Image 1: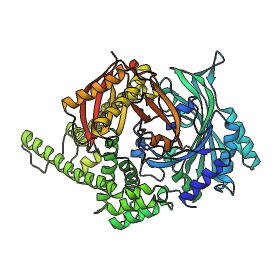
Image 2: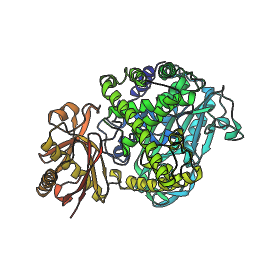
Image 3: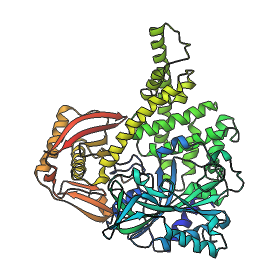
Image 4: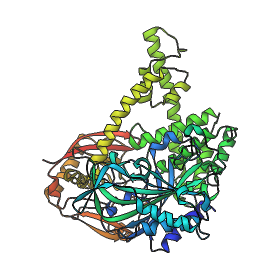
Length: 613
């Protein structure tokens, strides 16, 4: 069964059950500053899970391109990837557990579905969390185990002559609770989530490694079990440090990685040996003259990281030292390191093979191949120059301070950390240059750095568009005015490349090849403030995609949208495809002041501004 056949079978299964297919959302979100990349099919649907009416109805299904930067360091084993395709189905206040769970079993095991061996399937459910409570009917109830899912699964397994006591496992919130932020403790106020039930496939040919525990179980990390599907029952909203309340609707959010499902369908315990990845692995073997069996970890990293880089590059992201560009740079440099370690010379054929493997579903990659390849090869050239600059820095410092020559090997942890933060080199890359340093001291510096970054990320998440605070909504509307003013001044080829809005400031990224002059910045600021002063009304309407295009709504039409889109209009001035929310009148923004601009990468500029009186 090919990847496309799996996709078609999944989509058709749910379409027959009243679901409408929605389009794949952009990998780089247009108006969600809470995250760098779309990491699940649920992410673009948050407003509808909160209760807003979706134009396609209450039952939805799709295939979503997804990227999870937090998994970069996990790649190298038999199952982790950063870029993947997520099969998803949703109920927005329609069906719930008693429909979803039996459908899922039917899809996975029936002959008309994927025909998986039911004897190899195991179930996990939420075991409760007594540190949290639910406000229901004016009373607080403990966050109890999911007995309803357990009961439904028990009935299904018994009908199939399977022992529920040996098939159903209960876990705490780290394993069987889902929200965009993580566990209940990690969720900011206002975030939604709920318990989930996961399905695991057992590879009986893998012998349990006791270094992961005395006994194997579905969430064991030895590789014997692979999660292939996850149904989240999103029914709660966090309202206090230890409390949740019920959402207006009970929602279902199912997600299953296509690549993992293919492993189960083919009974192949190594994702990178499935029919989808095998052609890429083969070309890596050819270009390096090495075999996969002896160099599996390095080849997995190359295949995954270059695959993710192809899709990120296609989204007009350039390698840089910030945000999206930083992630792309990190992916590419890690793939280069492993390619060079295998004595590879030319990475271009691998890029071409990756694009070719996706062409059936994503033909636009083939059309943009030269642009994608140029982005990757330019970074390869820059990386080689960076390595030389790092060597020069160390050589100069140690020769001047200690009179030591270029052959110096041992450097301080502080200097290693400078090579990490300033030159973008990982500890492994630094060591590959022949330098050694105190690993413990470096780890302490890294921990301090990560704590600062994590605090910034938490602030970004809590203060992003998803918090719906008044100042954030004001700032979001201001970005629409700014976007239109920039396009009026510099032409319609200019487009938004990202945004981040907090109550303290607005940050807006856009495509442009130079810094704006002081006079240009002043004129832009004056234009936005004039539109604020005019007190223009703000409203939205759901329009067919072609109609939105006809009326001149701003949108990335090279990306796929649903057949109907939400278009926000600000008077007769600005029309833009957007999920919202916005102020009702522009006068509520009060005032718009540009604080500074900066260059964040090749062809991308950033404007910082503040709003309010």
